[in-house]
Length: 388
Ligand code: SF4
Image (cartoon, rainbow, N blue to C red; front, side, top):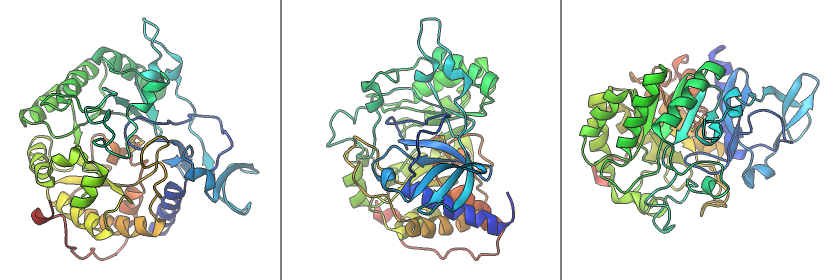
């Protein structure tokens, strides 16, 4: 990374791009993904050597002032006028996408390349909460990619291990992120995550992040760790009580305090900075609530991976607006200052979304804060035990 002013300028440009999206005329390369779990309807683009995920398939992205166009220097990022803002590269399709298992299953329906070097898979593409849309997380599209046969309902440990080995060998993949829909079992998917981690580690030495809801019995944290999971994500998504009830009516049955109890248990096993959570900004939580929650998370050793909400086609929130860039900059700046004053670093994690960082500008703000003399953000109210 160049000096702190360059880092800050890139961080703001990425923030703008991720909230507004981009019109792109079918540029070749890895096309990204639609539907599925987590952030989606986006593709990877590399600006100034940093690869980020930019919404391109949502309806809001079609109205973005940003566009990609062929220019004198190559692929150019333009905003309204034809003045180039940056030269952009579209990472190529990975070579493992051309392979199939012995029974003819395409590798790309088992796992996908995210960003530049992250292999990502959703082990269980169904979720106990999804079939009843009044209970499901309103932003989620986990079962949508099943409808057109792009993925499998359930990936076996052996399938994931086979793809992981090929992705490391052929495409230089450096970490594996495994998430899962929540099954109807007390382990909340931890058993399948542990079995898959063991199978992958038996074939290839690849850092792994597992993502799940808090399992009922904390013994599963140790079992996942013993099986080869290096880093764990348990995702709050939103934090204020009314917003939790509205956006994640089913998952909100697990209180914020239950999450913090699980975070403490997980950090005791995985270590400070190896546990993280997603915070989706733009769904109703105030900036103060997100910043206050981040402060509490960091104190507990949990990395708060703040991501702008991006509406996904076909979900109940497909027409919900993305947050403004100013809202995101306010949160990123405060959380990055908290991180700079702490012992947590995205880059120091073994694996996971916060280490990848491509769905957020937070790690860019973190780098800018680490090289500036900016004072720490003042403490803010909220996210304490009384707000659960
Ligand atoms: S941050 Fe997570 S979801 Fe986003 S591209 Fe990286 S690994 Fe995938």
